[in-house]
Amino acid sequence: MKILVINGPNINMLGIREPGIYGSETYASLVNLISDYCKGEGIEVDFFQSNHEGAIVDRIQKAYGVFDGIVINPAAYTHTSVAILDALKAVSIPAVEVHISAVNEREDFRQISYAGKACVKTYMGLGFNGYIEAVKFLESYLAKKK
Ligand code: DQA
Image (cartoon, rainbow, N blue to C red; front, side, top):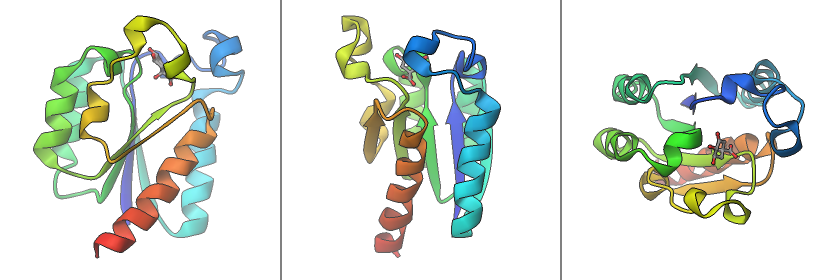
């Protein structure tokens, strides 16, 4: 099993950005957490973070035929990007949406998720643990698909 973890804009600022919402741990510690879990499970994992919508679209396209699953936190692009939605649909790789914060309890403009429409599952408000839950979900989802 080979998975790609994609994070959108400002996720590289974890630890600095709004710690009351996103916590005080850094992006590097998020990568370590997921890497450690995947190592224990024998899952191959790659990471990609970008502040640019087109770069995220390019990375999703390049994943075609390479990865079995995608974990994606499109961050602010969640609420605006039809291009990321279309890219996920184009490659049809099972994808799980993650949000560190409880977006459902936040501002009205965060209540729409375009990318989520192409995802088989969403986790929100679980902090970094949402990414681990997403990987666990993909493990059982992909095992059932075989
Ligand atoms: C986020 C929620 C988004 O609304 C926000 O723009 C982010 C992070 C989250 O992980 O909680 O940048 O995706």
